[in-house]
View (cartoon, rainbow, N blue to C red):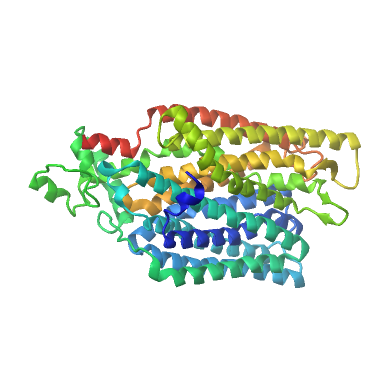
Length: 541
Protein backbone atom coordinates (compact mmCIF):
# COMPACT_ATOMS: atom_id res chain seq x y z
CA UNK A 1 0.00 0.00 0.00
CA UNK A 2 2.83 2.39 -0.70
CA UNK A 3 1.74 5.95 -1.19
CA UNK A 4 3.61 6.33 -4.48
CA UNK A 5 2.05 3.18 -5.95
CA UNK A 6 -1.42 4.26 -5.02
CA UNK A 7 -0.86 7.74 -6.41
CA UNK A 8 -0.49 6.16 -9.84
CA UNK A 9 -4.23 5.53 -9.73
CA UNK A 10 -4.93 9.24 -10.26
CA UNK A 11 -5.26 10.66 -13.76
CA UNK A 12 -3.10 13.46 -15.22
CA UNK A 13 -5.97 15.91 -14.82
CA UNK A 14 -6.31 15.04 -11.13
CA UNK A 15 -2.59 15.57 -10.55
CA UNK A 16 -2.63 18.92 -12.39
CA UNK A 17 -5.60 20.13 -10.33
CA UNK A 18 -3.86 19.06 -7.11
CA UNK A 19 -0.85 21.20 -8.12
CA UNK A 20 -3.15 24.15 -8.90
CA UNK A 21 -4.87 23.75 -5.53
CA UNK A 22 -1.47 23.83 -3.85
CA UNK A 23 -0.59 27.08 -5.64
CA UNK A 24 -3.87 28.65 -4.51
CA UNK A 25 -3.09 27.69 -0.89
CA UNK A 26 0.39 29.22 -1.28
CA UNK A 27 -1.21 32.49 -2.36
CA UNK A 28 -3.83 32.53 0.40
CA UNK A 29 -1.54 31.43 3.23
CA UNK A 30 1.09 33.90 2.02
CA UNK A 31 -1.40 36.65 2.87
CA UNK A 32 -3.40 35.17 5.75
CA UNK A 33 -0.72 33.53 7.91
CA UNK A 34 0.97 36.81 8.87
CA UNK A 35 -2.06 39.10 8.61
CA UNK A 36 -2.33 39.49 12.41
CA UNK A 37 1.22 40.92 12.46
CA UNK A 38 0.38 43.26 9.58
CA UNK A 39 -2.68 44.55 11.43
CA UNK A 40 -0.85 45.13 14.72
CA UNK A 41 2.44 46.51 13.34
CA UNK A 42 1.27 48.46 10.28
CA UNK A 43 -2.43 49.20 10.83
CA UNK A 44 -1.76 49.62 14.61
CA UNK A 45 -4.66 47.49 15.86
CA UNK A 46 -4.74 46.01 19.37
CA UNK A 47 -4.07 42.28 19.81
CA UNK A 48 -7.73 41.41 20.43
CA UNK A 49 -8.97 43.61 17.55
CA UNK A 50 -6.44 42.09 15.14
CA UNK A 51 -7.35 38.55 16.23
CA UNK A 52 -11.09 39.25 15.83
CA UNK A 53 -10.48 40.83 12.41
CA UNK A 54 -8.49 37.85 11.15
CA UNK A 55 -11.03 35.39 12.59
CA UNK A 56 -13.95 37.30 11.05
CA UNK A 57 -12.24 37.51 7.66
CA UNK A 58 -11.37 33.80 7.65
CA UNK A 59 -14.91 33.04 8.79
CA UNK A 60 -16.44 35.17 6.06
CA UNK A 61 -14.13 33.52 3.51
CA UNK A 62 -15.10 30.02 4.59
CA UNK A 63 -18.82 30.80 4.85
CA UNK A 64 -19.21 32.28 1.37
CA UNK A 65 -19.11 28.87 -0.39
CA UNK A 66 -22.45 28.06 1.28
CA UNK A 67 -24.00 30.98 -0.59
CA UNK A 68 -22.03 30.72 -3.82
CA UNK A 69 -22.06 26.92 -4.31
CA UNK A 70 -25.82 26.55 -4.93
CA UNK A 71 -25.68 29.42 -7.43
CA UNK A 72 -22.65 27.87 -9.15
CA UNK A 73 -24.42 24.50 -9.37
CA UNK A 74 -27.57 26.17 -10.70
CA UNK A 75 -26.39 28.60 -13.34
CA UNK A 76 -22.76 27.84 -14.28
CA UNK A 77 -20.65 24.82 -14.95
CA UNK A 78 -17.67 24.34 -12.65
CA UNK A 79 -15.04 25.20 -15.26
CA UNK A 80 -16.59 28.63 -15.94
CA UNK A 81 -17.06 29.25 -12.21
CA UNK A 82 -13.37 28.56 -11.55
CA UNK A 83 -12.21 30.97 -14.26
CA UNK A 84 -14.56 33.78 -13.20
CA UNK A 85 -13.86 33.47 -9.48
CA UNK A 86 -10.09 33.31 -10.07
CA UNK A 87 -10.32 36.75 -11.70
CA UNK A 88 -11.89 38.19 -8.52
CA UNK A 89 -9.31 36.33 -6.44
CA UNK A 90 -6.38 37.88 -8.36
CA UNK A 91 -8.05 41.31 -8.19
CA UNK A 92 -8.35 41.06 -4.40
CA UNK A 93 -4.73 39.95 -3.97
CA UNK A 94 -3.60 42.86 -6.13
CA UNK A 95 -5.68 45.31 -4.08
CA UNK A 96 -4.11 44.07 -0.82
CA UNK A 97 -0.63 44.48 -2.32
CA UNK A 98 -1.55 48.02 -3.40
CA UNK A 99 -2.50 48.97 0.18
CA UNK A 100 0.96 47.94 1.37
CA UNK A 101 2.50 49.98 -1.46
CA UNK A 102 0.44 53.08 -0.60
CA UNK A 103 1.25 52.82 3.09
CA UNK A 104 4.98 52.84 2.41
CA UNK A 105 4.51 56.44 1.26
CA UNK A 106 1.96 57.60 3.82
CA UNK A 107 0.92 56.04 7.15
CA UNK A 108 -2.56 54.47 7.15
CA UNK A 109 -5.42 56.48 8.62
CA UNK A 110 -8.07 54.88 10.80
CA UNK A 111 -10.84 55.30 8.26
CA UNK A 112 -10.33 55.31 4.50
CA UNK A 113 -7.16 53.21 4.39
CA UNK A 114 -8.55 50.53 6.69
CA UNK A 115 -11.78 50.48 4.68
CA UNK A 116 -9.85 49.90 1.44
CA UNK A 117 -7.95 47.02 3.07
CA UNK A 118 -11.26 45.58 4.29
CA UNK A 119 -12.83 45.64 0.82
CA UNK A 120 -9.66 44.15 -0.68
CA UNK A 121 -9.90 41.23 1.73
CA UNK A 122 -13.60 40.87 0.86
CA UNK A 123 -12.68 40.54 -2.83
CA UNK A 124 -10.33 37.68 -1.93
CA UNK A 125 -13.13 36.07 0.09
CA UNK A 126 -15.62 36.40 -2.76
CA UNK A 127 -13.20 34.89 -5.28
CA UNK A 128 -12.20 32.05 -2.99
CA UNK A 129 -15.81 31.37 -2.01
CA UNK A 130 -16.59 30.14 -5.51
CA UNK A 131 -13.08 29.01 -6.48
CA UNK A 132 -12.24 26.44 -3.81
CA UNK A 133 -15.38 24.25 -3.72
CA UNK A 134 -15.70 24.38 -7.52
CA UNK A 135 -12.05 23.40 -8.02
CA UNK A 136 -12.27 20.48 -5.61
CA UNK A 137 -15.59 19.30 -7.06
CA UNK A 138 -14.08 19.62 -10.55
CA UNK A 139 -11.12 17.54 -9.35
CA UNK A 140 -13.46 14.85 -8.02
CA UNK A 141 -15.22 14.89 -11.41
CA UNK A 142 -12.00 13.55 -12.93
CA UNK A 143 -12.51 10.26 -11.07
CA UNK A 144 -14.45 7.37 -12.56
CA UNK A 145 -18.07 7.60 -11.48
CA UNK A 146 -18.68 3.88 -11.14
CA UNK A 147 -18.67 4.33 -7.37
CA UNK A 148 -21.70 6.59 -7.63
CA UNK A 149 -23.91 3.53 -8.04
CA UNK A 150 -24.62 2.46 -4.46
CA UNK A 151 -25.46 -1.11 -5.44
CA UNK A 152 -22.12 -1.54 -7.22
CA UNK A 153 -19.75 0.10 -4.75
CA UNK A 154 -16.59 -1.83 -4.04
CA UNK A 155 -13.49 -1.28 -1.93
CA UNK A 156 -11.39 -0.35 -4.98
CA UNK A 157 -13.56 2.62 -5.95
CA UNK A 158 -13.87 3.70 -2.32
CA UNK A 159 -10.08 3.54 -1.89
CA UNK A 160 -9.59 5.58 -5.06
CA UNK A 161 -11.86 8.29 -3.72
CA UNK A 162 -10.03 8.29 -0.37
CA UNK A 163 -6.73 8.43 -2.28
CA UNK A 164 -7.88 11.51 -4.18
CA UNK A 165 -8.88 13.40 -1.04
CA UNK A 166 -5.70 12.36 0.72
CA UNK A 167 -3.38 13.56 -2.05
CA UNK A 168 -5.50 16.64 -2.60
CA UNK A 169 -4.91 17.60 1.00
CA UNK A 170 -1.24 16.70 0.65
CA UNK A 171 -0.96 19.18 -2.25
CA UNK A 172 -2.90 21.83 -0.34
CA UNK A 173 -0.62 21.43 2.68
CA UNK A 174 2.52 21.59 0.53
CA UNK A 175 1.38 24.94 -0.87
CA UNK A 176 0.44 26.16 2.60
CA UNK A 177 3.85 25.16 3.97
CA UNK A 178 5.70 27.09 1.27
CA UNK A 179 3.39 30.08 1.71
CA UNK A 180 3.86 30.25 5.47
CA UNK A 181 7.63 29.73 5.52
CA UNK A 182 8.64 31.74 2.47
CA UNK A 183 6.16 34.61 2.64
CA UNK A 184 6.39 35.28 6.38
CA UNK A 185 10.18 35.51 6.02
CA UNK A 186 9.93 37.83 2.99
CA UNK A 187 7.32 40.02 4.74
CA UNK A 188 9.42 40.35 7.89
CA UNK A 189 12.72 40.84 6.01
CA UNK A 190 11.97 42.59 2.72
CA UNK A 191 8.67 44.30 3.46
CA UNK A 192 4.96 43.89 2.92
CA UNK A 193 4.81 45.11 -0.70
CA UNK A 194 6.90 42.23 -2.04
CA UNK A 195 5.33 39.90 0.56
CA UNK A 196 1.83 40.54 -0.83
CA UNK A 197 2.82 40.85 -4.52
CA UNK A 198 4.34 37.36 -4.79
CA UNK A 199 1.08 35.57 -3.79
CA UNK A 200 -0.76 37.59 -6.42
CA UNK A 201 1.63 36.48 -9.19
CA UNK A 202 1.47 32.87 -7.93
CA UNK A 203 -2.30 32.97 -8.34
CA UNK A 204 -1.96 34.38 -11.87
CA UNK A 205 0.37 31.49 -12.80
CA UNK A 206 -2.05 28.93 -11.34
CA UNK A 207 -4.90 30.34 -13.47
CA UNK A 208 -2.67 30.08 -16.56
CA UNK A 209 -1.89 26.44 -15.72
CA UNK A 210 -5.58 25.70 -15.25
CA UNK A 211 -6.48 27.03 -18.71
CA UNK A 212 -3.57 25.14 -20.29
CA UNK A 213 -5.01 21.86 -19.00
CA UNK A 214 -8.40 22.36 -20.62
CA UNK A 215 -7.82 19.58 -23.19
CA UNK A 216 -7.18 16.82 -20.64
CA UNK A 217 -10.07 17.53 -18.26
CA UNK A 218 -13.14 15.33 -17.92
CA UNK A 219 -16.23 17.51 -18.19
CA UNK A 220 -19.02 15.73 -16.38
CA UNK A 221 -22.58 16.90 -17.06
CA UNK A 222 -24.16 18.37 -13.95
CA UNK A 223 -27.16 16.19 -13.27
CA UNK A 224 -29.69 17.99 -11.13
CA UNK A 225 -33.35 17.74 -10.29
CA UNK A 226 -34.27 20.42 -12.75
CA UNK A 227 -30.89 21.99 -13.46
CA UNK A 228 -31.37 24.48 -10.63
CA UNK A 229 -30.66 23.17 -7.11
CA UNK A 230 -30.97 26.68 -5.64
CA UNK A 231 -34.55 27.06 -6.85
CA UNK A 232 -35.25 23.51 -5.68
CA UNK A 233 -34.13 24.39 -2.15
CA UNK A 234 -36.50 27.36 -2.19
CA UNK A 235 -39.23 25.06 -3.47
CA UNK A 236 -38.55 22.69 -0.56
CA UNK A 237 -39.11 25.53 1.91
CA UNK A 238 -42.35 26.54 0.17
CA UNK A 239 -43.69 22.97 0.12
CA UNK A 240 -42.78 22.41 3.78
CA UNK A 241 -44.35 25.71 4.85
CA UNK A 242 -47.51 24.88 2.90
CA UNK A 243 -47.83 21.50 4.59
CA UNK A 244 -47.21 23.03 8.01
CA UNK A 245 -50.02 25.53 7.42
CA UNK A 246 -52.37 22.78 6.26
CA UNK A 247 -51.24 20.52 9.11
CA UNK A 248 -50.69 17.47 6.94
CA UNK A 249 -46.97 16.73 6.81
CA UNK A 250 -46.36 13.02 6.32
CA UNK A 251 -43.19 11.27 5.27
CA UNK A 252 -43.40 7.80 3.74
CA UNK A 253 -42.09 4.80 5.60
CA UNK A 254 -41.72 2.59 2.57
CA UNK A 255 -38.13 2.17 1.50
CA UNK A 256 -39.04 2.35 -2.16
CA UNK A 257 -39.70 6.07 -1.78
CA UNK A 258 -36.15 6.56 -0.57
CA UNK A 259 -34.91 4.73 -3.63
CA UNK A 260 -36.98 7.04 -5.83
CA UNK A 261 -34.99 9.96 -4.46
CA UNK A 262 -32.09 9.52 -6.86
CA UNK A 263 -33.85 8.13 -9.95
CA UNK A 264 -33.27 11.25 -12.03
CA UNK A 265 -29.51 11.26 -11.62
CA UNK A 266 -28.51 7.57 -11.53
CA UNK A 267 -29.93 4.06 -11.34
CA UNK A 268 -29.57 2.74 -7.81
CA UNK A 269 -30.41 -0.87 -8.62
CA UNK A 270 -33.00 -2.89 -10.43
CA UNK A 271 -36.27 -1.52 -9.13
CA UNK A 272 -39.66 -2.45 -10.50
CA UNK A 273 -41.48 0.82 -10.59
CA UNK A 274 -44.89 1.33 -12.06
CA UNK A 275 -45.04 3.55 -15.11
CA UNK A 276 -47.22 5.99 -13.22
CA UNK A 277 -44.72 6.31 -10.38
CA UNK A 278 -41.86 6.78 -12.82
CA UNK A 279 -43.65 9.45 -14.79
CA UNK A 280 -44.55 11.34 -11.64
CA UNK A 281 -40.94 11.48 -10.49
CA UNK A 282 -39.15 11.84 -13.82
CA UNK A 283 -38.61 15.55 -14.46
CA UNK A 284 -41.00 16.55 -11.67
CA UNK A 285 -38.95 18.36 -8.99
CA UNK A 286 -42.13 19.58 -7.37
CA UNK A 287 -42.95 16.09 -6.13
CA UNK A 288 -43.38 16.64 -2.37
CA UNK A 289 -41.67 13.44 -1.26
CA UNK A 290 -38.73 14.07 -3.59
CA UNK A 291 -38.17 17.61 -2.33
CA UNK A 292 -38.62 16.81 1.35
CA UNK A 293 -36.23 13.86 1.17
CA UNK A 294 -33.59 16.06 -0.46
CA UNK A 295 -33.94 18.66 2.29
CA UNK A 296 -33.57 15.89 4.87
CA UNK A 297 -30.24 14.85 3.32
CA UNK A 298 -28.79 18.26 4.21
CA UNK A 299 -30.57 18.70 7.53
CA UNK A 300 -29.46 15.32 8.87
CA UNK A 301 -25.83 16.43 8.51
CA UNK A 302 -26.28 19.46 10.77
CA UNK A 303 -25.73 17.70 14.14
CA UNK A 304 -22.37 16.26 12.98
CA UNK A 305 -21.52 19.62 11.36
CA UNK A 306 -22.24 21.41 14.65
CA UNK A 307 -20.03 19.10 16.70
CA UNK A 308 -17.08 19.89 14.41
CA UNK A 309 -17.24 23.63 15.15
CA UNK A 310 -15.00 23.52 18.25
CA UNK A 311 -12.34 21.77 16.18
CA UNK A 312 -12.53 24.72 13.78
CA UNK A 313 -12.28 27.21 16.68
CA UNK A 314 -9.06 25.55 17.85
CA UNK A 315 -7.63 25.89 14.34
CA UNK A 316 -7.98 29.67 14.49
CA UNK A 317 -5.36 29.86 17.24
CA UNK A 318 -2.12 29.28 15.24
CA UNK A 319 -2.74 32.34 13.01
CA UNK A 320 -3.70 34.57 15.96
CA UNK A 321 -2.72 33.97 19.59
CA UNK A 322 -0.09 31.30 18.92
CA UNK A 323 1.67 33.82 16.67
CA UNK A 324 1.44 36.59 19.29
CA UNK A 325 2.83 34.16 21.89
CA UNK A 326 5.80 33.46 19.66
CA UNK A 327 6.58 37.16 19.35
CA UNK A 328 7.35 37.30 23.10
CA UNK A 329 9.70 34.28 23.14
CA UNK A 330 13.35 33.76 22.21
CA UNK A 331 13.45 33.44 18.41
CA UNK A 332 17.17 33.72 17.63
CA UNK A 333 19.10 31.07 15.71
CA UNK A 334 22.73 32.10 15.91
CA UNK A 335 23.58 35.78 16.21
CA UNK A 336 21.84 37.31 13.24
CA UNK A 337 18.86 35.19 12.21
CA UNK A 338 15.54 35.60 14.04
CA UNK A 339 12.62 33.25 13.30
CA UNK A 340 9.42 35.04 12.19
CA UNK A 341 6.70 33.87 14.63
CA UNK A 342 4.26 33.06 11.82
CA UNK A 343 6.81 30.62 10.37
CA UNK A 344 6.03 28.18 13.15
CA UNK A 345 2.65 27.60 11.51
CA UNK A 346 4.63 25.67 8.91
CA UNK A 347 5.12 22.96 11.56
CA UNK A 348 1.45 22.07 11.07
CA UNK A 349 1.72 21.59 7.32
CA UNK A 350 5.20 20.05 7.55
CA UNK A 351 3.95 17.41 9.99
CA UNK A 352 1.07 16.67 7.60
CA UNK A 353 3.40 16.30 4.61
CA UNK A 354 5.82 14.03 6.50
CA UNK A 355 3.22 11.92 8.30
CA UNK A 356 0.55 11.61 5.60
CA UNK A 357 2.39 8.76 3.80
CA UNK A 358 2.76 6.97 7.15
CA UNK A 359 -1.00 7.05 7.52
CA UNK A 360 -1.24 4.80 4.46
CA UNK A 361 1.84 2.66 5.08
CA UNK A 362 1.65 2.12 8.85
CA UNK A 363 -1.62 3.15 10.46
CA UNK A 364 -4.06 1.72 7.91
CA UNK A 365 -2.45 -1.79 7.87
CA UNK A 366 -2.50 -1.86 11.68
CA UNK A 367 -6.14 -0.78 11.90
CA UNK A 368 -7.06 -3.30 9.18
CA UNK A 369 -5.70 -6.08 11.39
CA UNK A 370 -7.34 -4.76 14.55
CA UNK A 371 -10.76 -3.93 13.08
CA UNK A 372 -10.88 -6.70 10.41
CA UNK A 373 -12.06 -3.96 8.03
CA UNK A 374 -10.36 -3.55 4.64
CA UNK A 375 -10.57 0.24 4.93
CA UNK A 376 -9.12 0.28 8.47
CA UNK A 377 -11.19 2.91 10.25
CA UNK A 378 -14.38 4.59 9.15
CA UNK A 379 -14.52 8.24 8.10
CA UNK A 380 -16.37 9.21 11.29
CA UNK A 381 -13.84 7.39 13.47
CA UNK A 382 -11.08 9.20 11.62
CA UNK A 383 -12.66 12.59 12.39
CA UNK A 384 -13.10 11.65 16.06
CA UNK A 385 -9.40 10.74 16.45
CA UNK A 386 -8.41 14.14 15.05
CA UNK A 387 -10.77 15.94 17.42
CA UNK A 388 -9.21 14.11 20.37
CA UNK A 389 -5.68 15.06 19.28
CA UNK A 390 -6.70 18.74 18.96
CA UNK A 391 -7.83 18.67 22.60
CA UNK A 392 -4.42 17.32 23.66
CA UNK A 393 -2.79 20.12 21.64
CA UNK A 394 -4.78 22.77 23.54
CA UNK A 395 -3.84 21.24 26.89
CA UNK A 396 -0.16 21.40 25.91
CA UNK A 397 -0.64 25.01 24.71
CA UNK A 398 -2.16 25.94 28.09
CA UNK A 399 0.72 24.34 30.00
CA UNK A 400 3.36 26.11 27.87
CA UNK A 401 1.58 29.46 28.28
CA UNK A 402 1.47 28.97 32.06
CA UNK A 403 5.25 28.38 31.99
CA UNK A 404 5.79 31.49 29.84
CA UNK A 405 3.76 33.68 32.21
CA UNK A 406 5.56 32.21 35.22
CA UNK A 407 8.97 33.09 33.76
CA UNK A 408 7.68 36.55 32.76
CA UNK A 409 6.62 37.29 36.35
CA UNK A 410 9.94 36.05 37.75
CA UNK A 411 12.07 38.35 35.62
CA UNK A 412 9.93 41.36 36.65
CA UNK A 413 9.15 44.53 34.74
CA UNK A 414 11.39 45.05 31.73
CA UNK A 415 11.13 47.27 28.65
CA UNK A 416 10.94 44.17 26.44
CA UNK A 417 8.16 41.58 26.61
CA UNK A 418 10.56 38.87 25.44
CA UNK A 419 11.03 36.06 27.96
CA UNK A 420 14.03 33.67 28.05
CA UNK A 421 11.99 30.75 26.74
CA UNK A 422 12.64 29.28 23.29
CA UNK A 423 9.89 29.57 20.71
CA UNK A 424 10.42 25.88 19.97
CA UNK A 425 8.43 25.10 23.14
CA UNK A 426 5.41 25.87 20.97
CA UNK A 427 6.32 23.14 18.46
CA UNK A 428 4.46 20.23 20.15
CA UNK A 429 1.10 21.99 19.95
CA UNK A 430 1.68 22.87 16.29
CA UNK A 431 2.74 19.30 15.39
CA UNK A 432 -0.24 17.77 17.20
CA UNK A 433 -2.61 20.08 15.35
CA UNK A 434 -0.97 18.94 12.10
CA UNK A 435 -1.52 15.27 12.99
CA UNK A 436 -5.12 15.99 13.95
CA UNK A 437 -5.51 17.63 10.55
CA UNK A 438 -4.58 14.37 8.80
CA UNK A 439 -7.46 12.66 10.55
CA UNK A 440 -10.23 15.23 10.85
CA UNK A 441 -9.87 17.57 7.86
CA UNK A 442 -9.33 14.82 5.28
CA UNK A 443 -12.15 12.86 6.92
CA UNK A 444 -14.46 15.90 6.74
CA UNK A 445 -13.85 16.31 3.02
CA UNK A 446 -14.70 12.68 2.31
CA UNK A 447 -17.66 12.68 4.73
CA UNK A 448 -19.46 15.69 3.24
CA UNK A 449 -18.63 14.54 -0.32
CA UNK A 450 -20.24 11.15 0.30
CA UNK A 451 -23.27 12.34 2.24
CA UNK A 452 -24.79 14.75 -0.32
CA UNK A 453 -26.44 13.91 -3.67
CA UNK A 454 -24.23 13.95 -6.78
CA UNK A 455 -26.02 17.01 -8.14
CA UNK A 456 -24.97 19.00 -5.04
CA UNK A 457 -21.32 17.96 -4.69
CA UNK A 458 -20.13 21.57 -4.81
CA UNK A 459 -22.54 22.20 -1.93
CA UNK A 460 -20.95 19.28 -0.09
CA UNK A 461 -17.54 20.91 -0.23
CA UNK A 462 -19.16 24.19 0.82
CA UNK A 463 -20.54 22.46 3.92
CA UNK A 464 -17.00 21.32 4.74
CA UNK A 465 -15.47 24.79 4.38
CA UNK A 466 -18.38 26.39 6.25
CA UNK A 467 -17.36 24.46 9.38
CA UNK A 468 -14.20 26.56 9.49
CA UNK A 469 -16.15 29.68 8.51
CA UNK A 470 -18.61 29.42 11.36
CA UNK A 471 -15.74 28.30 13.61
CA UNK A 472 -13.91 31.53 12.80
CA UNK A 473 -16.96 33.64 13.66
CA UNK A 474 -17.52 31.59 16.80
CA UNK A 475 -13.89 32.21 17.79
CA UNK A 476 -14.30 35.97 17.29
CA UNK A 477 -17.55 35.91 19.29
CA UNK A 478 -15.89 34.00 22.13
CA UNK A 479 -13.04 36.53 22.21
CA UNK A 480 -15.52 39.43 22.40
CA UNK A 481 -17.59 37.84 25.17
CA UNK A 482 -14.57 36.73 27.22
CA UNK A 483 -12.88 40.10 26.78
CA UNK A 484 -16.00 41.96 27.93
CA UNK A 485 -16.44 39.65 30.93
CA UNK A 486 -12.80 39.47 32.08
CA UNK A 487 -12.08 43.21 31.65
CA UNK A 488 -15.14 44.34 33.64
CA UNK A 489 -14.73 46.08 37.02
CA UNK A 490 -11.23 47.23 36.12
CA UNK A 491 -9.78 43.72 35.79
CA UNK A 492 -7.09 42.76 33.28
CA UNK A 493 -8.47 41.13 30.13
CA UNK A 494 -7.38 37.64 29.15
CA UNK A 495 -6.34 39.18 25.82
CA UNK A 496 -4.35 42.11 27.18
CA UNK A 497 -1.97 43.88 24.80
CA UNK A 498 0.66 43.42 27.53
CA UNK A 499 1.56 39.76 26.93
CA UNK A 500 3.10 39.63 30.43
CA UNK A 501 -0.34 40.08 31.99
CA UNK A 502 -2.64 38.14 29.68
CA UNK A 503 -4.73 35.09 30.53
CA UNK A 504 -4.28 33.04 27.39
CA UNK A 505 -3.62 29.93 29.47
CA UNK A 506 -7.14 30.16 30.91
CA UNK A 507 -8.53 30.66 27.38
CA UNK A 508 -6.73 27.54 26.16
CA UNK A 509 -8.08 25.50 29.08
CA UNK A 510 -11.58 26.74 28.23
CA UNK A 511 -11.17 25.67 24.59
CA UNK A 512 -9.92 22.23 25.66
CA UNK A 513 -12.93 21.76 27.97
CA UNK A 514 -15.46 22.91 25.34
CA UNK A 515 -13.83 20.64 22.73
CA UNK A 516 -13.94 17.65 25.07
CA UNK A 517 -17.67 18.19 25.57
CA UNK A 518 -18.12 18.51 21.80
CA UNK A 519 -16.22 15.24 21.24
CA UNK A 520 -18.43 13.45 23.77
CA UNK A 521 -21.60 14.60 22.00
CA UNK A 522 -20.03 13.69 18.64
CA UNK A 523 -19.37 10.13 19.84
CA UNK A 524 -23.01 9.82 20.93
CA UNK A 525 -24.23 11.12 17.55
CA UNK A 526 -22.00 8.66 15.68
CA UNK A 527 -23.76 5.78 17.44
CA UNK A 528 -27.11 6.99 16.08
CA UNK A 529 -25.99 8.21 12.65
CA UNK A 530 -26.73 6.14 9.55
CA UNK A 531 -24.69 7.03 6.48
CA UNK A 532 -26.22 7.68 3.08
CA UNK A 533 -24.57 4.59 1.56
CA UNK A 534 -25.99 2.39 4.34
CA UNK A 535 -29.47 3.78 3.70
CA UNK A 536 -29.17 3.23 -0.06
CA UNK A 537 -27.69 -0.25 0.26
CA UNK A 538 -30.48 -1.13 2.66
CA UNK A 539 -32.98 0.11 0.10
CA UNK A 540 -31.46 -2.08 -2.60
CA UNK A 541 -31.94 -5.27 -0.60
